[in-house]
Length: 384
Ligand code: FAD
Image (tube, rainbow, N blue to C red):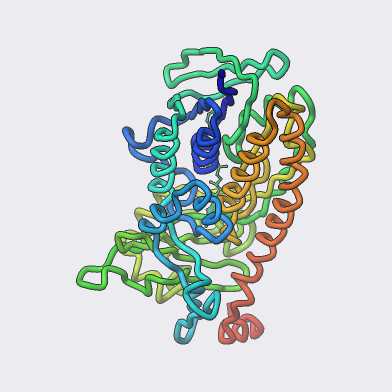
């Protein structure tokens, strides 16, 4: 019996996990990924260097048989370590004990592990192949490689896991309007690094925590990496009056700001100038779509369908949950892909909308209400 073929666009976190789950359920899966193979060329980032993996994402990895492998490469985070402007940092635990924790994982390491697992399950990857266009009526896609060479590929069933800037979404929307709404947050981010400590401890600050420096309208966070470093993310208004990325255009201005607002953090970032001047400012927004699919022909999943702001650490986790639901629906559907796609949207869209709202709320919670009384008093006195 010929196996049903599914074409995936995007071999990132969600695409690679979905590919593995579908292959394990007997589908013939081909994945077209824009970037070169990260296992050969090295991982090309662009989004956060590490991510918080939570229970809903772990559950999907358990279904794929990969949870233990991933956790071996992760750092446990027991709670939020809140760093007030004045005073001693304090841990706010997520649960009563270590049964309720989240995990810090490397994006590149996780992607590599998922690609290996998908390939072992029989998935065929085509790296360096970017979706340029999709003819939804003819069920045919156009891909272009790094040299600009075009190729065409028949894709009777097409799933787009090509992220927040999805090219498949654009092609689908040209065919049938999807009701796309993008709501920019107005705040942006920049990544910095606390390097590993010398000596036995390896970590310069508490390793088993998600660190937060809440400062009202903005904040820094830091997540640990297995080799002892931390990835620090500064979240700040993109534009407008001080402080914003407009008023902190370079490391000199930013260092002055950090000396005032994050005095305990700045000395931990020895390459502050290189990091600040060298790393891009990333925009943040929430994506809503009325329609995630065009009948049985094409469907969007993960960030391509529902990109959210990162403050609940749930974008990947939500996308991982998507993959299990979709793989189950397609496996149960026989040839009735249309019903599977419609059911997928019916089940997952309310969840994605709820997580999007929670993520927006949590930005306020993280930057404000993990409250620093000294800081709030200072703000009330208008001392800034
Ligand atoms: P992506 O990871 O964006 O992958 C898309 C893939 O498609 C990429 O490999 C890309 O190269 C490929 N692609 C793109 N265009 C094409 C094309 N035209 N043709 C072929 N391939 C293409 N989530 C969490 O759960 N926890 C966190 O702590 C967390 N922290 C975050 C921090 C930041 C700063 C940001 C920005 C996001 C964070 N997220 C977090 C969200 C998480 O990064 C995303 O939800 C997740 O990456 C979505 O996975 P994806 O596979 O859908 O998309």
